[in-house]
Length: 367
Image (cartoon, rainbow, N blue to C red; front, top):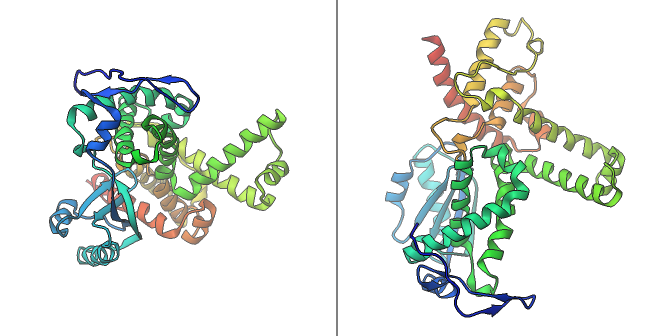
């Protein structure tokens, strides 16, 4: 970051009639800075794959004028090209992935996606803007801190994530809509905090938990007490059977979050696992079950060398549940997908990550 501090220029008035002094970053008034790198339309293709792609090779083979970004946190690829190219890009991506032994998942083509590249802004302007909005964002996120700490317990990781969110806001902010950047960023921060849970635990299950929490909070505010099961179901417009099924999903998520073995490092000694009686002796001896259970837990633990915001830096709880409950819990993937409100395809993606790590772990144990 540069040493420039934002300085006010001509005073303006906000929507409430209060005086607001425009900010200056790197010697450039904020409004003028956005104009130097206006947001532009492009076509975009989003997709995931069942096996990770060689990103550098993909970048090298992409047609001229096409770029790709990869979000390690949720495994999402984004390919950007000129307007009118979405359909051609989608076909090209499917064919390229197939040649490299991968299948695309949830591929979606969008037209007229408006984005800017933060690097196109003047360096001093961008540095000062981040220096200003980073602390502002941290203050705004105080109300969400209990949720954030589940995924980013290290203050340094949280600080880095906040600056990445500011840059993400810069890339998405459309100055032509007349909304100040600070207001736009505040609304996006709440959504991105919720996405932390979606990325870690599966989108549908995390949404279910979020909706239940909001409904309980709204009922508490209205009635000054917690709702009964029947009252909560009526409040949410659901049947009691649906509420119970969704509550089981939330309970499963919370149980997985509380697995201390997933939060510990490789030398952690306390391993919390379901009762060994769930796996009959005729299927697996107690010693073998314990050995493999520990190996499975280690395979799902966060990679200590990965950033906390990366997919590898978070516990792979969905992969753990898929492997454990189908191996020792006697459930099929179809049954489990219904219990967790997620797709079998999504479970397979997370289970494949477990398989790769588990093979390495078992090889180490065999040695």
